Image (cartoon, rainbow, N blue to C red; front, side, top):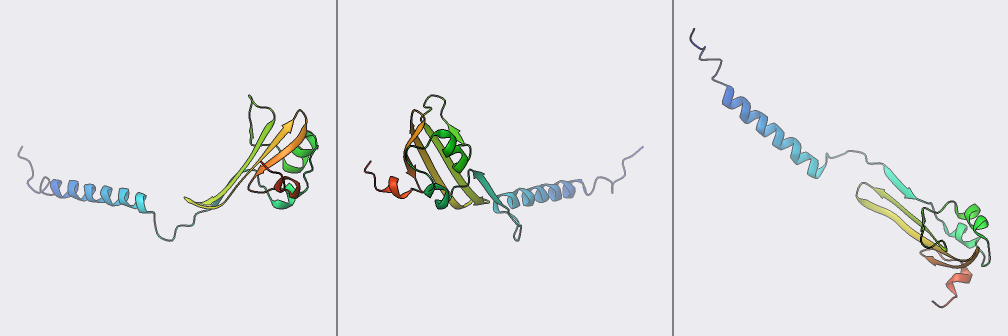
Length: 126
């Protein structure tokens, strides 16, 4: 039985159309669709100046944890340092970024360094 000539007539056109559609879809992934809403993504511990101002030298770790929350980074090799990083971004755009580091001597708070400092830590010379 002979092949129907119209059945195979549009096969090259179909593959060209599929290739063009695939190229358009992958191009949209690089630039993003216009008007698409992107949510704000918060990562880390929220740190404010009011929280840091409540810290006093000599506070124990339990009191610091009550004010600041559980540290995001607690180094297992250096138990005297706690890190509180925070970043909020919308897509790839960073809106706000902050880092606060607590240093302890045994169980008591000795120093605070980072983007937010209490008045007693700001006056210390590193």
